[in-house]
Amino acid sequence: MTPEATAGQIVIGATAGAGAITLGSSSTTQTVNVGTGAGAPTINVATGAAGDLTIGFASSTATGLRLASRRVSLGNKLAHKDCADAACSPTVSEILDSGLFIAAASANRAFTLPTAAQTAGDGAGLVAGLPGTAAVGDTFSFVISNSGASTVTVTAGTGGTQVGNAVIGAAATKVVFCRVTSITTNSETVTCY
Image 1 (cartoon, one colour):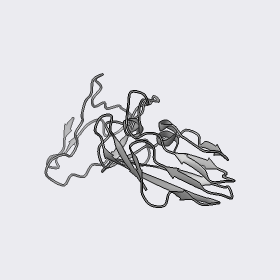
Image 2 (image 1 turned 90 degrees about the vertical axis):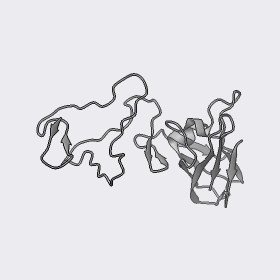
Image 3 (image 1 turned 180 degrees about the vertical axis):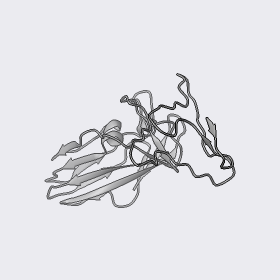
């Protein structure tokens, strides 16, 4: 660490050349706070002419990035789920990790969301499947594209509430946004719009 002439500024790492800086490398849970004081901090990360910024893990372990109250998954998504011309009941992983569903409905087809709650019989629900520790107000979204001549109707699973128009018309695409409304263990809930 090198104190700079600018008041309160500390430079960590070399000003030129290659190097690595590690904050929090323990195998136990750690929190690294930056700019949490009462002032109005400016935090610059990877603002050079070129470079990469990696947040999360290099493995397939679920991770998340919180921007205000929205959890965002960035990176390579799983392939889309092909619902074809049938009812579709995607898994928690398909909703949260893929987020893209393709249908070709020739008659009205149901699209049933997985349970929101984590229960002994159902395993992890949508809320427990979110990266990190879920909080009320966290959101996630997914897309349903219907190339068929009929409709697809979204139905909430256990612990879920569907608000507004839940029908994806013929040859239409819809983005569904869901918001966590309770994180009570085994009684988690979401509302989808």
